[in-house]
Length: 176
Image (cartoon, rainbow, N blue to C red; front, side, top):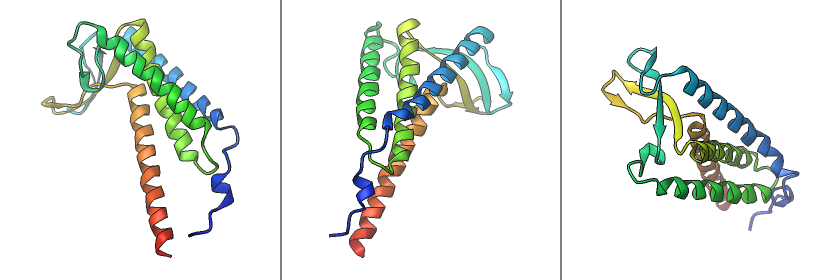
């Protein structure tokens, strides 16, 4: 059995200090959504890069890729409960991190900030404000998204990266 590094088992000192990053995501997300809502006309693209990127104000009543958007409104509460549960659960996970798990702390903070940013929209507006619109020559569109969605995706990639990196490290230890 490999010798375990005693620092890898030690709790992270003040892991919840990473919640400042979640707060920064929330502030930037809500600020950009307010700006987009005040400056853009609904569903009228403003070309940023011709044939590739527009700013287009859209309202998403569903979840990712407008999942369940065409339902009667019950989904608003379901997605709100999921966001609250995720933020609480991820905060508990964050509070239990060990030293050296900085990437996980950053990833969790990004996901928490994104979840709360979109939760705010759901509770206040009944929909999530999206405004980044990527496409290829106006023929193939990626679903519109916002800063919160971006933070959630980057955080998820961070968790996956950490998990893969950890698995590779454990496999290498087993070979020595």
